[in-house]
Length: 199
Image (cartoon, rainbow, N blue to C red; front, top):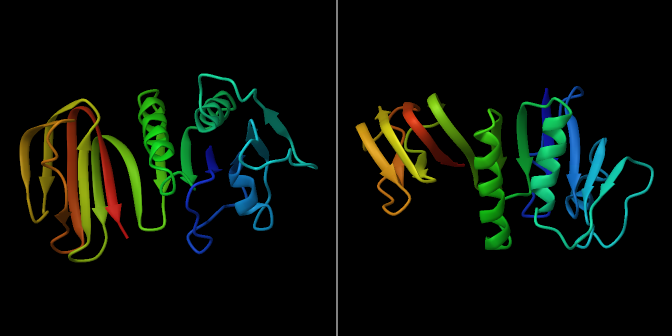
């Protein structure tokens, strides 16, 4: 089951897409982005950003003095409810510290076996292990970053190919690649990478 999250970061309503069967979670201030756009199944957070508790919908309120971010707690709640695919809006852009925290959350839950995609105004970001084919337009840019160490990394049909490469979190060799003809194959044999595709 897919869960759609909306956080309090940069939000583009033109990109926002929800299917009838999706479970929709507003994460704190993200509620303001979508309260008039779609059904909200659950609001999660300490609601310090929103400034009030949403009424007329299910809410899961947390104490603002806590170790986990609102997004982490929302991810965890969705996982407990059986969701295995996360599509996240409003998690990129805005405050850099919040963006990094959201990327760390994506990594943590990807390691738990969940598919996590963050959708921003100018890019999408996905934690990847295994194989993935990127489809887009010729010349579209993408980047790969390692969270720790990723081994056996392959890029086929990119402007800058890789073969059995090792990516670390201290050297950005995977930054700013390009699709040659609209399709590119990526493989990671060991570890996880962050795949960022620019719109």
